[in-house]
Length: 626
Image (cartoon, rainbow, N blue to C red; front, top):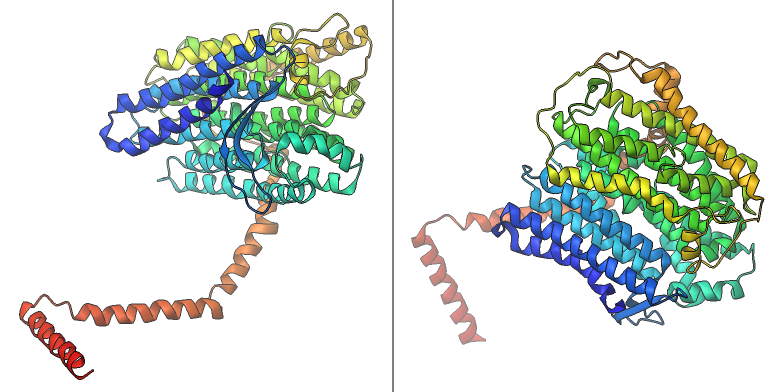
């Protein structure tokens, strides 16, 4: 089955290519069929390959499929080759399966949009590049997928490009993530200069023998890779692009936040875990950034009125939990939470998309209300998604994935009580803003009647994702000694690093009970302040502190003051320098010659004939006398 790896990647690209080449010759139904079908076939192949990998490979030996040699220049000879192990299998399952559900949902959501075919071209391209990223066996091919998802995010965030604000959001996402990508590019140069290869497996095997733990070169390399991860995964200080990315259609938001771009940074750090093991300072930085980010984003989410921006800040916060896990060496916990987060975050974005779509593009939660009876399927599935996001104890998948991170942030060799307390505070904030969103949107009085209702293509993905948001946690149940085993054992075959202390069973149960009570307390607090309360259908009044959090802690204002305005100021001064005048002079000269030549084209045939005769006489004279 490993021979099918290339086909998993190729199918979304093929769907995008067919839609591009066929153009307007295809009907809307055919465009939907190709867009949805190609990704769905990729998901089916992923299941087949995954079953084969699990059944026929008990030792977890990676599958490697080399397609062709990409290039061979000055010792650099990367292949177009794909590497399948526990981590990449988990990621491609989420990308294809969740991606296919989002594509199916998009069939009705985007049906009336004039850019339907273009939408599926971009979405398929997005999935194809993400699959390339997570299956690549070398850093150069990974970087191709990395930049590919960056391009697709720009295209999809600015999909409705006729609105200037959407174009601005797309450019902002592209430019901010380029900052991190620049650091990552330098990191790739450092890796090649030291190891003379960009093959990931070869680098991870050779690194411990070349670089001692704590060496400066290991620290620099890990920090450069971390820079790339911070940009793509929207962590401090490069998180500002993600809330504005809500300018794109809701299915785009669901795909970016659950299965593609923002999880790329998590994958990069997990895949290069050996380098971070060799740089303890860099790894500790990952944990600290994750802990701070989850708190910053949680407080920002609590003060938003736009339902999609709440979910955007929620994603930043939940990725923060993944970074916290990576930073304490809990690699499998980070990957597990990635998977569960993909289920409930896709569910929440698709549910929010139905609400917005039904209310004629209304985003303000204070202008919603009373929708639980108007949109019953959306309400119940959204409630399940919010409960899983809040880590409601025992019955939701989010409890098992988040509880594992909280426990290991304290119990691992690199954990601490402070990291655990930050994660616990973030858990309270998460439950509070999640159910604030539920109560404002679905309870209270009806402020606006839905103008249209979702069909099966929109509700079936919600039902499937809601089941996974509950049942998905049971693949990682605590073992006999209280430690999480099933999924962890599967992932650690690809990442054979265990950094968890064997702390007592009863201690872990106490921590689980504490985290569960915190989640319930957050839900209870939301109930006290938002359940059954009459809210005006208007912009809520905020005090100075709430306004500060609402604006995302004023990071945009800070960057605008320190970076954007000075750059624009000096660019204005420099716009008419000597170099510009030289090229402007060349352009003016070309225009002058163009006017002279265009004057000869006056439409008078007799003048053309005379000029032709004169030209012939001059030419013959030159020939005769030379």
